[in-house]
Length: 243
Length: 243
Image (cartoon, rainbow over all chains, first blue to last red; front, side):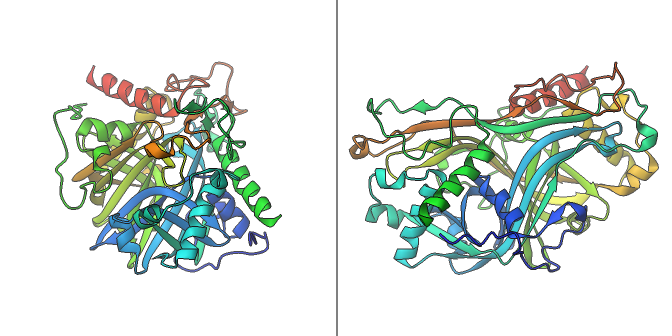
């Protein structure tokens, strides 16, 4: 797969995606935005149905500058997005609780990416199959070939939506507490409580055979940070596709 | 504080919040919705500015059936929400990666809550101060009294938005893989890779005194699950307020 995350490439900046607050935390380059997207399994999608804003969590995956998600063909969200619907896809990693010496300076360390574009149903059957293959391979490289093949019924029951990322921004806070100089003598603990998503011990299905094939699970040993595992799996998938 | 999370109380169900897909995963009672909200520090807010859907991550906190968030008074989101703006506030916890024997049956374990309402700027100075106090106390019970007091400048620079939860739904998947009976002989590992947010080792500010007061940090020792710590802190705050 061609990966167009070259650090020299960037998303255009407009009134829609320009970061106004804390703009020193903002990045628009593909590498920064894609790293945040690829380190997550769950995004939140902002869209409008009948004038009502909705914010729906779902699993996303990325291929170049395109984002994908999927769901039941009966999903209200996917039906609304079928014909082309403006959306904002946001991924956020909480990295730390920042404790300061005033309420005002309490904060959080985080990485977030907001992506704007138009969601559209993937109608072409080849593109749809390719996208569903990518969904498995992106999280579990090498796994799809070991699975029961996709059936006509699976395809009918599943809708896949794709979106070209037209504009995007990344915003990152990754530092210690920042207090006013005159607050430094307040005798309260200040600093950062780092947090991270961690993989626990695998819970096997009771029907697993003794030598069940662990295809695609290499990135996720117990104790691994999930963001790093997901990024590594995406990289392995891209490297595998390139070979 | 009166906590109206009694399990017998529930949010009304309408076309807006009724869960259509996998409705057996849905709950509408206060206890289920509030537990998901209280176990998180970050929500995603879906709203519309100039016809463009936006999805913005921010820190939220709950008091009864009201949600609050805050930010810079110059924030475009908060200015848009000042006069009353329909929003959808969603909190999602990813709890596990579910691996199955077909691509179709791969899934995720999660807990999510979607809350609908109208965001409005808190203009009343007493209500605003109370909300900012609650923001600190809800995460760090007992801490606010140890901090440098809120200044007029802090208040001017900060906007607080509040929302009555008009309708809400919780959706939870918490189980193992579900495969078709005819797929059980596919010789691939199936099961769940559980994931959780965990607190790491505290990173102290170099300006901390030797006996810096660790007020409000009791819920967050290293190795704690963040969702459980946040829920416990919220409970401690409510218990403290009730005493």
